[in-house]
Image 1 (spheres, rainbow, N blue to C red):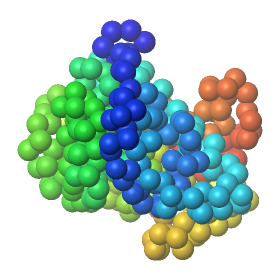
Image 2: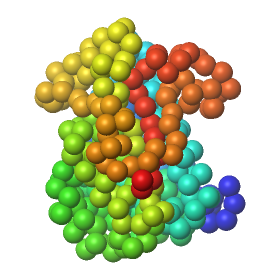
Image 3: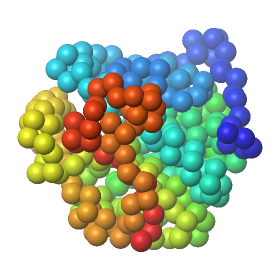
Image 4: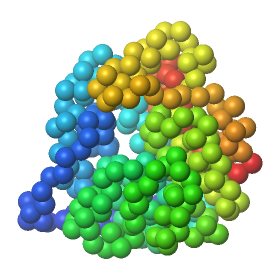
Length: 297
């Protein structure tokens, strides 16, 4: 890429890294980071950020998931690759959209750090219910220049009025194009609440875009994949205390959210685009995971 969307950043010094206490990461985030490995981040800055996190809480889960669901590691790698690919494409085709990015359910993801370094003209708002005050302190210590381009907001994503008030209070402009990013969020919000969130996100400007990941409704999956996915979700529930992880029918979701699907991807198509051949997924039916770029209908 050219222009403001591709600038290399020097990693922080070893002394700076040693002086920073590693922060504890929750079990599911730690599991994803361990399985994704280097590809949990896309830039030197993002990888440095991840290296400052203690992912020990996810070790046992990562080992168990890798043994029983070997496709899970590739799922995480592909979804991070696809998010980054689409975000870059959107920013190149419509530069203004890439300059105002809201990461929903950001948690300990390196996505915002990556984008703040990758696109020097961008401003990034990260939103989640917990941990963002700690994350902000770490980012400010490691990358003070990038931290000036980022704002962290702790808010309940199911409460739209609070979410939007928090964004506006932190300098987000509703009348400017915005790229909304929701990686791994759809599983934790009921489909109607996630649809309402996307409807709000896409309402404010005709150039707005949302990049999302979600799971298909079980009745749309092949029987073997449905059983494998249900077992995986059930295992996660035993580890996290969540009663279930949500999935949905994309046709119904688009009607509820008023969104127009501009691009779709499944793991088989992502593997083909990324590697030139299928390694684990030979068809869309081999996985219930889907990703999409949405625009206002």
